[in-house]
Length: 389
Length: 125
Image (cartoon, rainbow over all chains, first blue to last red; front, top):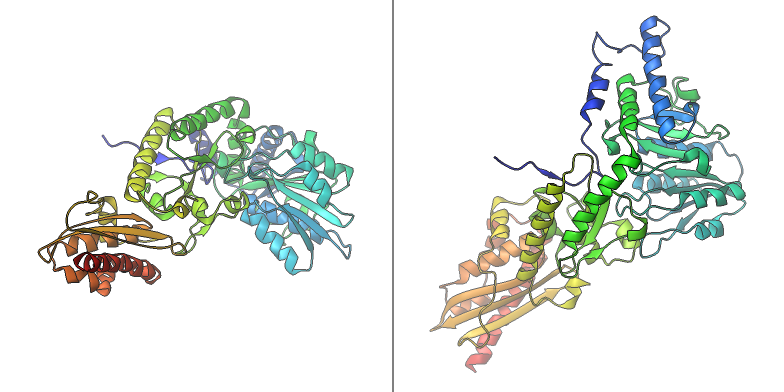
């Protein structure tokens, strides 16, 4: 019997939990709650009740009020709505945006769109472990700052930023704080109300929910300008017919997402991976072991060509330290920000575990990676130092 | 990145990977590198009675370069020594269906074999 495929790319997306699938299917067919939640008839009202129940479940998991949750198509749309919506709602002539160099592209590309409009930008650098300090935020904020946007868990290296302390600084300076928490749900507790976060992007598909559904937490005193037009759904902030099945799926996803239960299990799997891989000569951890999300491990194998490493491990679903959108991969902007050379960034791998990862999977992965690293290093025996730096 | 079946086969089991023992009679060594292209390659070639008897290589680089070095190493064995100086790179590129952006690495592989050819001449002198 062949072994099941090794999937260690849960930071990219996850398999949908069967309980989520079941809840979604119940909203699709003629026997279920397929009706438009905005319709006034009884079927529509039933669908609306399901939507609101999902909203309550999500709000409960992130310590928010249900009314603060605005459904979107995912974290990318949430990031766009939060950032563009905050700037469009602020009519001051000189406006300033603070973010970091290690954000997801959905934030960085939105920042560039603001820059093109003449908005002043400050990009905060991280240190060699991927940490951005609250003091850096304090130093960067000015009287013209409209918004600070900082991700909770970095999607490549898994470093957790101190959002609570950053939120306190933003509150003191009366600046809005947006947090991209796409990687957090189900792994790390989110206390949006307690921390004083103003805006927070959430998604379902990183936590064993469906793709195509997310949410933006909008604190009740935050004013945003909608970016879509054509309906008054979602407090007038996000036009479009509510996708009941997707929303119900996200609600079930967050109901099942239990950081207190899943976090330690995921951390155990991640640690098993690291304990096995750290025996490989020269291997390095990218990120900060003391501030690591439980599900992400990013490691570098000096002396290995990145493209060869990726092909050698093509049977394992992992992410490489490069953006392979083109024929010549560009090194990851996150790893470059840590100070890694292009060669080291290219020879890095992100392994991310999830609910369906088994301990045996980590052992197989360690064995496969160890074998291929040894093979490629033997092939390159005698290579000059630049191949490892 | 797409890889031809020939590249995949030779990447998994590159023929000629390794080295010839130091001090073996008739063995010459040639090396080339290009950091900007991300390739380093070294060939050991054993020549006896004017014929290439064995070729081994070490290489840091991409799968295409590994496959190319293996294909070339395999093809040189049994050929006259002068073959080291007149590789048919177009045929190598065609046999492996190499993308154009990889041709620079082929030139570095050629450089390493030319270094072997020069070392062979120096050994004769």
